[in-house]
View 1 (spheres, rainbow, N blue to C red):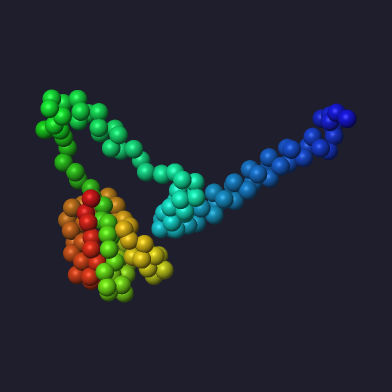
View 2 (cartoon, rainbow, N blue to C red):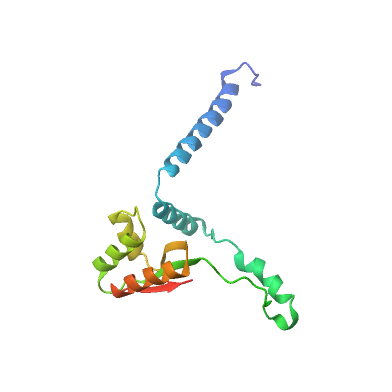
Length: 151
């Protein structure tokens, strides 16, 4: 028996698509309410589950430019880096003090988020800061007993 346009089965497919679209709208709304650290955790979970990486291919773009110069050396006109990322590499033995310093370095970071960040080291604490701010954050967190890198 052929299904015509007026058949109820023909409309079920349309309703499923509409419901699926509504589900994605709900998902987008839920994701919009997550904190940056929660989204980072979600990205990590999805990368592990799907076996992919969300890392941007930044080094790939820089590779051909450097290779094109004589001797493979970087061009002297390369811009000096102006923004830096502060990365917690090891938690250390005084977890509570480190969590406290991480919370002071990242305004609006909740206790649970800071704890998850510290326990999940290596993790980026703050991105796109000046060299001076990165050095200050590193100094304070290392004084609390953790190991920090500036990238």
